[in-house]
Length: 195
Image (cartoon, rainbow, N blue to C red; front, side, top):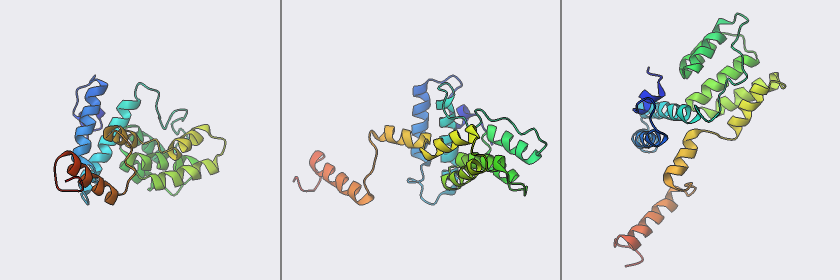
């Protein structure tokens, strides 16, 4: 698996923000689950594209970094140390597999599991595990900040999808279809109420 976000997006190192956005939009059109219903490979590719884009967007902006203020496990728990390394390189499924190989489930385990699940786009488990980590160590600011970020829904894709469309799409599919039909009729001369 290639973990270089520039390679995933197909742009050269040092690409401008605009080049990165264009590449992201192109790949989102190609792999978005709504355009590829039931295609698990496309869904996996979209997750990789989202993670790469988010990483490049946050690199210079002091954005969310799950390990800000977090110290790498040093107490000899090899599973958590390995999971930490996998997460640092955006290899989230390997991190989860490693964590699941141990029975020891302390607050750090739940934190690492939450970050890995969030990286895969599984917000339900990510939130559940981050809440558990915070409940086990309520004074841990790293865990609290990560939970706040997850609860605010700070996924880069959500923001970019809204920017790409020009406005947030809050209507249901039937309303969208009617709006499309109406606009076609009025603007393009197709059959409709304006004829």
